[in-house]
Length: 482
Ligand SMILES: [Zn+2]
Image 1: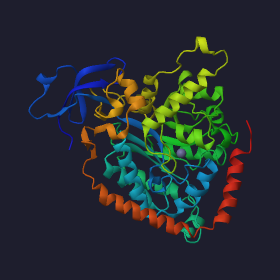
Image 2 (image 1 turned 30 degrees about the vertical axis):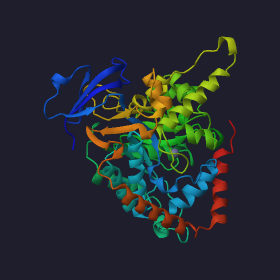
Image 3 (image 1 turned 90 degrees about the vertical axis):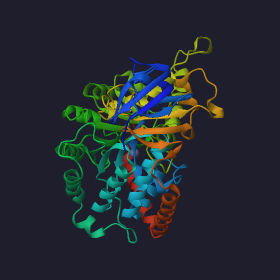
Image 4 (image 1 turned 45 degrees about the vertical axis):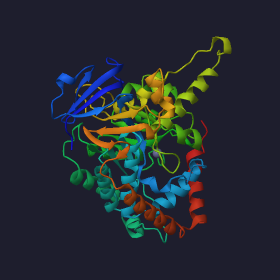
C-alpha cells in the first residue's frame, strides 16, 4: 500500500531542471506523492515514514515507455534476426492469432512485470491482441494486477483467422467492425467516465495500422478514438523502408486533425514540413531504437524531432525482438546519434566535439516520455508535488563503483540488476532487487506453459498462404519510394 517513505542520503538525478543532480540528498514520499527533495530532511520525517537508506545509490525518475505491444512476452527472441516483414508474418499473422484469453493476460502481466523490474514505471500499451472482447478485459486486468502506470490503447487491428487459430472466423467475417463497439464497451465499463491525469491506468485508442488503408479511414478511426475521450491515440507512422508515401501527417495537418492527444511511433521518414506540423500541433513522437535500426524502419528521429521543437520520447516496442529495457534504448540511440552527427558534412577529426550528452537521452526516457503522454506535471522527474514513480539504483556492482558522473553512470553503465527499489504511485513494487507480491517461479511456469500452447497451435497455420498475403501487405506498405 502507498505509505510514507523517507529515502535517505542518495544521489538524486532529478531530471527536473530546477533541481538538477544533488548528492547526499533525501526524498520524502507521502500519500502517493513526492513531498520533499533536498539534503537533511530527517527533521521532516515522522515515525510513520519507512526509512530506505540510499547511500551509494542513485534516485531517479522511473522510465516512461511510450511504445510497447506488451502482449508479446511469450514471443521473446522470435524476430531478433528479422526485418519488419518477418515481424508481420510471424508475430502479427501467425502467433497473434494463437493467443487465447489466458495468453493475453500472461503476456501483458509478465510484460508489465518485466518493465517494472527494469525500472519502467509507465507503459503506453499499443494493444493489438483483441482476438475477442475477453482478451481486452484480460489485457487490462493484467496491467492493473502488475500495478504499472500506463495507458491501455485499445487496438482495432484484427489478427487473421485461419483454421486452427483461436480467432472466431464467423465474428470476423460477419461483424468485421465489432472492435469499435467493444472499444466503446471497454471505455464505458473499465474506466472512469472522466479520466484524471493521476489515474494509474487510463484508456487510449489505437487505429488498425493507421497508414494501411487511406487518409479517410485513418481520420475516421482517430475521430472515433476522440469520441471515446481517449487519453492518447497512437499509431505507427512513416517507417522509412516501410513508408508507403501516404504522408498521413501532411494530410492530417491539412484537415486540422493533428493534436496533443496523438502519439505517433517510429516516424523516421517524416519530412521537414511534417515535423514542423507535429511540433506546432503538440503531437508526440516515440522512437524505438532497437526495432527501428534493426528492422528497416530508419534512423530514430528523436533528436532531429527534438531540434525541431517536437515532443520526443522512447519506447521498447516488441519483446519478440528486444527486452523491455530502457537502458538499452538510451544507449543504442545516444551512440548511434553521436556516430551520425560525427559524420555530418563539415565534421572532421581535429574540430570534432561530442554532439549529444547523456542527460539529453535520459530526459527523453523520463520527462520527455511523460510529456509525450500528457503527464509532464504528474510524473517523469523527482519533483515535489509529482506522483512518486521513481527508481533507486544501487551502485555497489563492479560496473558502478566508483564513478564521477551519476547521469553517465545511469545512462551508460547501469543495468536492471542494479535497480534495488521501484516506486509506482508511492507504492513499492520492487524491493531488494525483487518484485514485490509476485510469485515469480509460479508465474514463470504458467508463462512457459502458455508459450508452449501458443507454439503448438501455430503449427496449424497455413504458412504458405499467409506468407503470400503478408508479401502483398508489405509490398503495399513499401511500394512507394520517397
Ligand atoms: Zn509498434
